[in-house]
Image (tube, rainbow, N blue to C red):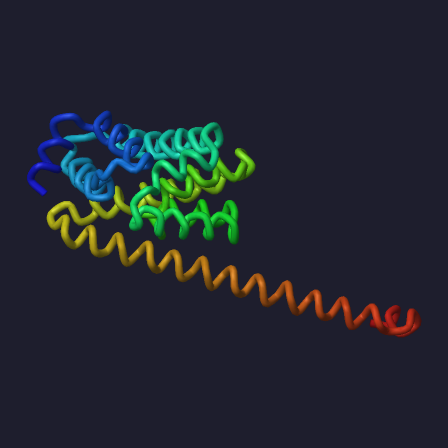
Length: 211
């Protein structure tokens, strides 16, 4: 923790930008902790909010875009080289399933809910030729949630970064639960309406006019 505080206070938003960028390319950097720390220093007015927030968000988005481009240009060969070890291959396989099953929505959740999968999803989305605009929209929304939550909780709980980290994680979990509940409700309503249309279509024309 002391090392993180020293680095953030010494190099500021530029360092946060670099960390966010590299963490999206499989470089093991505790960017979430650094954002919390940066948020705390915004609260003490040692750093400026717009610089911290902008640096973290821009770094994350550009890092994801770089991963997507690498995957698009290198294709399956990139994934094979990156996932030589059994542990990495297991993570890569999970990312493949996430993109195959959910597409852009999978990209969205990988940026904050399934953060360890995030860099892999970037590469795989590119190698699978996921539509770039679709990738960018979902990715930007997801990174916005990630950056906003961690910097905000660092700001609010500046005096206790451990509590900030705990609450930030719990909040992301609550957002995920709400998103899944909303998706389930949407699916149920859509299914009911489709069923009603099918039943209506089987009725004689005279009866349909009276409904």
